[in-house]
Image 1 (cartoon, rainbow, N blue to C red):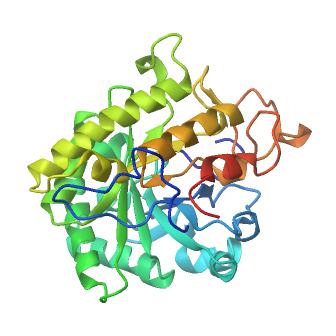
Image 2 (cartoon, rainbow, N blue to C red):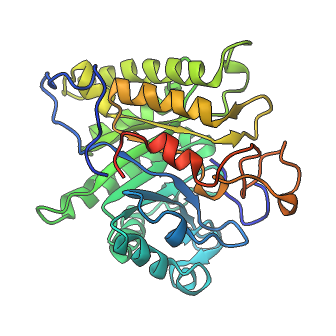
Length: 345
Protein backbone atom coordinates (compact mmCIF):
# COMPACT_ATOMS: atom_id res chain seq x y z
CA UNK A 1 0.00 0.00 0.00
CA UNK A 2 1.51 3.24 -1.15
CA UNK A 3 0.31 6.50 0.41
CA UNK A 4 1.42 9.86 -0.86
CA UNK A 5 0.80 13.45 0.00
CA UNK A 6 0.22 14.23 -3.66
CA UNK A 7 -2.98 13.56 -5.55
CA UNK A 8 -2.31 9.96 -6.65
CA UNK A 9 -1.22 7.66 -5.16
CA UNK A 10 -15.60 -4.47 17.10
CA UNK A 11 -17.20 -6.45 18.94
CA UNK A 12 -16.98 -10.27 18.45
CA UNK A 13 -17.31 -11.62 14.92
CA UNK A 14 -20.44 -13.44 13.80
CA UNK A 15 -18.55 -16.59 12.82
CA UNK A 16 -19.37 -18.83 9.85
CA UNK A 17 -19.83 -22.57 10.02
CA UNK A 18 -16.12 -23.41 9.94
CA UNK A 19 -15.10 -20.86 12.55
CA UNK A 20 -18.03 -21.63 14.81
CA UNK A 21 -16.46 -24.97 15.66
CA UNK A 22 -14.72 -25.02 19.02
CA UNK A 23 -11.06 -23.99 18.77
CA UNK A 24 -8.85 -27.01 19.30
CA UNK A 25 -5.10 -27.43 19.43
CA UNK A 26 -2.33 -26.27 21.68
CA UNK A 27 -1.69 -22.68 20.61
CA UNK A 28 -2.96 -19.64 22.51
CA UNK A 29 -6.10 -18.01 21.18
CA UNK A 30 -5.72 -14.58 19.53
CA UNK A 31 -7.83 -11.55 20.38
CA UNK A 32 -11.35 -10.87 19.12
CA UNK A 33 -11.73 -10.57 15.31
CA UNK A 34 -12.17 -7.05 14.00
CA UNK A 35 -12.73 -4.97 10.90
CA UNK A 36 -11.10 -1.65 10.16
CA UNK A 37 -10.12 0.36 7.11
CA UNK A 38 -6.73 1.91 6.51
CA UNK A 39 -6.58 5.68 6.27
CA UNK A 40 -4.00 7.52 4.21
CA UNK A 41 -3.47 10.27 6.77
CA UNK A 42 -1.00 12.33 4.71
CA UNK A 43 -2.98 12.46 1.45
CA UNK A 44 -3.68 16.07 0.51
CA UNK A 45 -6.30 17.56 0.81
CA UNK A 46 -6.19 16.17 4.32
CA UNK A 47 -8.81 13.58 5.17
CA UNK A 48 -11.20 14.02 8.09
CA UNK A 49 -10.93 10.43 9.31
CA UNK A 50 -12.21 11.40 12.75
CA UNK A 51 -15.63 11.95 11.17
CA UNK A 52 -15.48 9.47 8.27
CA UNK A 53 -14.51 6.50 10.47
CA UNK A 54 -16.84 7.29 13.37
CA UNK A 55 -18.61 4.10 14.40
CA UNK A 56 -15.89 1.72 13.23
CA UNK A 57 -14.35 -0.41 15.96
CA UNK A 58 -10.87 0.02 14.46
CA UNK A 59 -9.27 2.55 12.12
CA UNK A 60 -5.79 1.82 10.79
CA UNK A 61 -3.67 4.96 10.44
CA UNK A 62 -0.89 4.78 7.85
CA UNK A 63 1.93 5.25 7.88
CA UNK A 64 4.57 5.94 10.50
CA UNK A 65 7.99 5.80 8.86
CA UNK A 66 11.52 6.95 9.55
CA UNK A 67 12.14 10.67 9.17
CA UNK A 68 14.22 11.05 5.96
CA UNK A 69 16.72 13.33 7.73
CA UNK A 70 16.68 11.74 11.19
CA UNK A 71 16.34 7.98 10.65
CA UNK A 72 15.64 7.13 14.31
CA UNK A 73 12.87 9.72 14.56
CA UNK A 74 9.32 8.64 13.69
CA UNK A 75 7.24 10.66 11.26
CA UNK A 76 3.94 10.46 9.48
CA UNK A 77 4.74 9.57 5.90
CA UNK A 78 8.16 11.19 6.08
CA UNK A 79 6.42 14.57 5.94
CA UNK A 80 5.29 15.41 9.47
CA UNK A 81 6.88 14.89 12.85
CA UNK A 82 4.58 13.92 15.68
CA UNK A 83 4.32 17.50 16.95
CA UNK A 84 3.66 18.92 13.48
CA UNK A 85 0.98 16.28 12.92
CA UNK A 86 -0.98 17.68 15.86
CA UNK A 87 -1.64 20.92 14.00
CA UNK A 88 -1.36 20.01 10.30
CA UNK A 89 -3.18 16.66 10.45
CA UNK A 90 -5.17 17.30 13.68
CA UNK A 91 -3.98 13.86 14.73
CA UNK A 92 -4.78 14.01 18.44
CA UNK A 93 -8.11 15.72 17.85
CA UNK A 94 -9.20 13.14 15.26
CA UNK A 95 -8.14 10.16 17.36
CA UNK A 96 -10.09 11.60 20.28
CA UNK A 97 -13.16 11.89 18.03
CA UNK A 98 -12.90 8.23 17.04
CA UNK A 99 -12.66 7.17 20.67
CA UNK A 100 -15.57 9.35 21.67
CA UNK A 101 -17.62 7.54 19.00
CA UNK A 102 -16.70 4.17 20.55
CA UNK A 103 -13.82 3.12 18.30
CA UNK A 104 -10.05 3.04 18.55
CA UNK A 105 -6.97 3.33 16.37
CA UNK A 106 -4.37 0.98 14.99
CA UNK A 107 -1.07 2.59 14.01
CA UNK A 108 0.62 1.09 10.97
CA UNK A 109 4.40 1.36 10.62
CA UNK A 110 5.98 1.03 7.20
CA UNK A 111 4.16 0.84 3.88
CA UNK A 112 5.66 1.04 0.41
CA UNK A 113 6.53 4.72 0.08
CA UNK A 114 9.24 5.23 2.76
CA UNK A 115 11.47 3.30 5.15
CA UNK A 116 9.86 1.42 8.01
CA UNK A 117 11.77 2.69 11.10
CA UNK A 118 13.76 -0.54 11.62
CA UNK A 119 15.16 -0.32 8.08
CA UNK A 120 16.57 3.16 8.56
CA UNK A 121 17.46 3.16 12.26
CA UNK A 122 20.37 0.80 13.02
CA UNK A 123 20.52 1.62 16.75
CA UNK A 124 18.31 -0.92 18.60
CA UNK A 125 17.72 1.32 21.63
CA UNK A 126 16.88 4.32 19.47
CA UNK A 127 14.53 2.17 17.39
CA UNK A 128 12.79 0.95 20.53
CA UNK A 129 12.42 4.55 21.65
CA UNK A 130 10.95 5.58 18.29
CA UNK A 131 8.28 2.89 18.42
CA UNK A 132 7.57 3.60 22.08
CA UNK A 133 7.19 7.32 21.40
CA UNK A 134 4.40 6.66 18.89
CA UNK A 135 2.60 3.96 20.86
CA UNK A 136 2.68 5.97 24.09
CA UNK A 137 1.67 9.24 22.51
CA UNK A 138 -1.47 7.81 20.92
CA UNK A 139 -2.10 5.13 23.59
CA UNK A 140 -2.17 2.52 20.83
CA UNK A 141 -3.75 -0.89 21.61
CA UNK A 142 -2.91 -2.47 18.24
CA UNK A 143 0.26 -2.03 16.15
CA UNK A 144 0.47 -3.01 12.50
CA UNK A 145 3.82 -3.48 10.74
CA UNK A 146 3.43 -3.20 6.97
CA UNK A 147 6.65 -4.73 5.65
CA UNK A 148 7.15 -4.74 1.89
CA UNK A 149 9.59 -4.00 -0.96
CA UNK A 150 13.07 -3.08 0.36
CA UNK A 151 11.95 -3.40 3.99
CA UNK A 152 11.00 -7.02 3.33
CA UNK A 153 14.44 -7.91 2.00
CA UNK A 154 16.49 -6.65 4.95
CA UNK A 155 17.05 -9.48 7.48
CA UNK A 156 19.05 -7.28 9.86
CA UNK A 157 16.29 -4.68 9.98
CA UNK A 158 13.67 -7.38 10.40
CA UNK A 159 15.59 -8.76 13.38
CA UNK A 160 15.86 -5.30 14.97
CA UNK A 161 12.12 -4.84 14.52
CA UNK A 162 11.31 -8.24 16.01
CA UNK A 163 13.45 -7.68 19.10
CA UNK A 164 12.05 -4.18 19.64
CA UNK A 165 8.45 -5.34 19.32
CA UNK A 166 9.03 -8.18 21.78
CA UNK A 167 10.36 -5.67 24.30
CA UNK A 168 7.41 -3.34 23.71
CA UNK A 169 5.02 -6.15 24.51
CA UNK A 170 6.99 -7.06 27.64
CA UNK A 171 6.77 -3.45 28.84
CA UNK A 172 2.99 -3.32 28.68
CA UNK A 173 1.19 -3.33 32.04
CA UNK A 174 -0.98 -6.32 32.84
CA UNK A 175 -4.41 -5.89 31.36
CA UNK A 176 -3.30 -3.58 28.51
CA UNK A 177 -1.51 -5.86 26.03
CA UNK A 178 -0.15 -4.71 22.68
CA UNK A 179 -1.79 -6.60 19.82
CA UNK A 180 0.68 -6.95 16.92
CA UNK A 181 -0.04 -7.73 13.27
CA UNK A 182 2.35 -8.19 10.37
CA UNK A 183 0.99 -6.94 7.04
CA UNK A 184 2.72 -8.64 4.12
CA UNK A 185 2.35 -8.94 0.33
CA UNK A 186 0.92 -12.17 -1.00
CA UNK A 187 0.35 -13.95 -4.29
CA UNK A 188 -2.11 -16.76 -5.04
CA UNK A 189 0.77 -19.06 -4.00
CA UNK A 190 0.95 -17.45 -0.56
CA UNK A 191 3.67 -15.49 1.22
CA UNK A 192 7.05 -15.11 -0.39
CA UNK A 193 10.11 -16.68 1.21
CA UNK A 194 11.09 -13.23 2.47
CA UNK A 195 7.64 -12.83 4.02
CA UNK A 196 7.89 -16.19 5.76
CA UNK A 197 11.28 -15.16 7.14
CA UNK A 198 9.84 -11.97 8.63
CA UNK A 199 7.14 -13.98 10.42
CA UNK A 200 9.67 -16.54 11.65
CA UNK A 201 11.95 -13.81 13.03
CA UNK A 202 9.05 -12.24 14.93
CA UNK A 203 8.06 -15.55 16.48
CA UNK A 204 11.65 -16.53 17.30
CA UNK A 205 12.14 -13.19 19.08
CA UNK A 206 9.23 -14.00 21.37
CA UNK A 207 6.64 -11.68 19.82
CA UNK A 208 3.06 -12.65 20.67
CA UNK A 209 1.93 -12.22 17.08
CA UNK A 210 -1.82 -11.76 16.63
CA UNK A 211 -1.56 -12.68 12.99
CA UNK A 212 -0.47 -12.10 9.42
CA UNK A 213 -2.54 -9.65 7.39
CA UNK A 214 -2.13 -10.44 3.70
CA UNK A 215 -2.51 -7.70 1.10
CA UNK A 216 -4.93 -9.29 -1.34
CA UNK A 217 -4.01 -6.92 -4.15
CA UNK A 218 -1.33 -6.10 -6.72
CA UNK A 219 -1.08 -9.67 -7.94
CA UNK A 220 0.18 -8.72 -11.38
CA UNK A 221 1.36 -11.71 -13.41
CA UNK A 222 0.98 -14.07 -10.44
CA UNK A 223 -2.80 -14.05 -11.00
CA UNK A 224 -3.64 -16.40 -13.88
CA UNK A 225 -5.67 -15.10 -16.80
CA UNK A 226 -9.35 -15.49 -16.11
CA UNK A 227 -8.97 -15.74 -12.34
CA UNK A 228 -11.12 -13.19 -10.54
CA UNK A 229 -9.78 -11.02 -7.73
CA UNK A 230 -11.96 -12.91 -5.25
CA UNK A 231 -10.70 -16.28 -6.47
CA UNK A 232 -7.09 -15.08 -6.33
CA UNK A 233 -7.60 -13.69 -2.84
CA UNK A 234 -9.20 -16.88 -1.55
CA UNK A 235 -6.38 -18.95 -3.02
CA UNK A 236 -3.79 -16.61 -1.50
CA UNK A 237 -5.48 -16.77 1.90
CA UNK A 238 -5.63 -20.57 1.89
CA UNK A 239 -1.96 -20.77 0.97
CA UNK A 240 -1.03 -18.29 3.70
CA UNK A 241 -3.15 -20.26 6.17
CA UNK A 242 -1.02 -23.35 5.58
CA UNK A 243 2.16 -21.32 5.92
CA UNK A 244 0.96 -19.84 9.22
CA UNK A 245 0.38 -23.30 10.65
CA UNK A 246 3.88 -24.37 9.59
CA UNK A 247 5.54 -21.21 10.91
CA UNK A 248 3.84 -21.37 14.28
CA UNK A 249 4.62 -25.09 14.55
CA UNK A 250 8.29 -24.39 13.83
CA UNK A 251 8.17 -21.89 16.72
CA UNK A 252 6.76 -24.53 19.06
CA UNK A 253 3.06 -23.59 18.81
CA UNK A 254 0.73 -26.11 17.22
CA UNK A 255 -2.37 -24.43 15.79
CA UNK A 256 -5.61 -26.03 14.74
CA UNK A 257 -7.05 -25.03 11.37
CA UNK A 258 -9.48 -22.70 13.14
CA UNK A 259 -6.77 -21.08 15.25
CA UNK A 260 -4.65 -20.51 12.15
CA UNK A 261 -7.53 -18.80 10.35
CA UNK A 262 -7.89 -16.46 13.32
CA UNK A 263 -4.29 -15.44 12.63
CA UNK A 264 -5.06 -14.44 9.05
CA UNK A 265 -6.13 -10.94 8.01
CA UNK A 266 -7.32 -9.89 4.55
CA UNK A 267 -6.75 -6.44 3.03
CA UNK A 268 -7.94 -5.74 -0.52
CA UNK A 269 -7.63 -2.45 -2.37
CA UNK A 270 -11.14 -1.31 -3.13
CA UNK A 271 -12.22 -0.03 -6.52
CA UNK A 272 -9.77 0.51 -9.35
CA UNK A 273 -6.34 -0.74 -8.37
CA UNK A 274 -3.05 0.79 -9.51
CA UNK A 275 -2.33 -2.53 -11.29
CA UNK A 276 -4.21 -2.60 -14.62
CA UNK A 277 -7.05 -5.10 -14.70
CA UNK A 278 -7.40 -5.40 -10.93
CA UNK A 279 -10.75 -4.06 -9.77
CA UNK A 280 -12.65 -4.87 -6.58
CA UNK A 281 -16.27 -3.72 -6.84
CA UNK A 282 -18.89 -3.93 -4.06
CA UNK A 283 -20.06 -7.35 -5.29
CA UNK A 284 -16.51 -8.70 -5.08
CA UNK A 285 -16.11 -7.10 -1.65
CA UNK A 286 -19.27 -8.88 -0.47
CA UNK A 287 -17.90 -12.20 -1.73
CA UNK A 288 -14.59 -11.62 0.03
CA UNK A 289 -16.42 -10.74 3.24
CA UNK A 290 -18.45 -13.96 2.99
CA UNK A 291 -15.25 -15.96 2.54
CA UNK A 292 -13.62 -14.20 5.51
CA UNK A 293 -16.61 -14.91 7.74
CA UNK A 294 -16.87 -18.53 6.67
CA UNK A 295 -13.19 -19.17 7.39
CA UNK A 296 -13.23 -17.15 10.61
CA UNK A 297 -10.35 -14.78 9.88
CA UNK A 298 -9.07 -12.56 12.66
CA UNK A 299 -9.20 -9.31 10.77
CA UNK A 300 -10.46 -7.66 7.59
CA UNK A 301 -9.24 -4.27 6.40
CA UNK A 302 -9.00 -2.43 3.08
CA UNK A 303 -7.07 0.32 1.34
CA UNK A 304 -8.37 2.90 1.90
CA UNK A 305 -11.14 4.77 3.70
CA UNK A 306 -10.18 7.89 1.73
CA UNK A 307 -11.28 6.06 -1.44
CA UNK A 308 -14.67 4.77 -0.24
CA UNK A 309 -16.72 7.13 -2.38
CA UNK A 310 -17.51 7.73 -6.05
CA UNK A 311 -15.28 9.99 -8.11
CA UNK A 312 -16.26 13.49 -9.18
CA UNK A 313 -14.79 15.68 -11.89
CA UNK A 314 -12.27 17.14 -9.45
CA UNK A 315 -10.76 13.69 -8.87
CA UNK A 316 -9.61 13.24 -12.45
CA UNK A 317 -9.87 10.10 -14.60
CA UNK A 318 -11.86 7.46 -12.64
CA UNK A 319 -10.19 4.68 -14.65
CA UNK A 320 -6.89 5.47 -12.92
CA UNK A 321 -6.38 4.77 -9.22
CA UNK A 322 -6.05 7.79 -6.96
CA UNK A 323 -6.17 8.52 -3.25
CA UNK A 324 -9.61 10.10 -3.12
CA UNK A 325 -12.21 7.85 -4.76
CA UNK A 326 -12.77 4.28 -5.92
CA UNK A 327 -13.28 4.91 -9.62
CA UNK A 328 -16.58 2.99 -9.47
CA UNK A 329 -20.26 3.78 -9.18
CA UNK A 330 -20.98 3.29 -5.48
CA UNK A 331 -22.56 4.84 -2.44
CA UNK A 332 -20.22 6.73 -0.15
CA UNK A 333 -19.13 4.36 2.61
CA UNK A 334 -20.43 1.28 0.78
CA UNK A 335 -17.19 -0.71 1.02
CA UNK A 336 -16.94 -0.03 4.74
CA UNK A 337 -20.40 -1.46 5.26
CA UNK A 338 -19.95 -4.43 2.94
CA UNK A 339 -16.51 -5.55 4.09
CA UNK A 340 -17.32 -5.01 7.75
CA UNK A 341 -20.55 -7.00 7.65
CA UNK A 342 -20.61 -9.56 10.45
CA UNK A 343 -17.50 -8.21 12.15
CA UNK A 344 -19.34 -5.80 14.46
CA UNK A 345 -20.64 -2.24 14.16
